[in-house]
Length: 81
Image 1: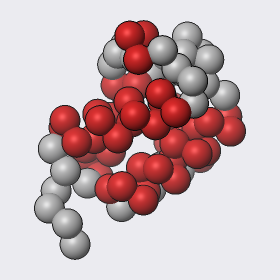
Image 2 (image 1 turned 120 degrees about the horizontal axis):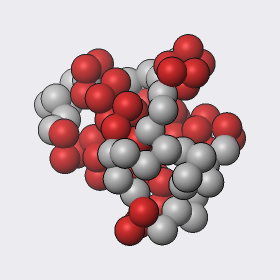
Image 3 (image 1 turned 60 degrees about the vertical axis):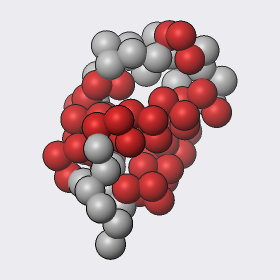
């Protein structure tokens, strides 16, 4: 298995994925909510696949229910990576 990803690796993965969904990179912060970024449930489903492919971390439907912002996603991935 690959080395444990750094916080920067995880942030790069998530931020890059959000940009591919059409989010302006200048609006992506830890505090930004997915609603503010205009990310819908299909985008979140795709983000979970990107995270799993890149870091081997699975985000569940229960995780997605409690995630409030980008920082929450980064923290969950870091905890499980």
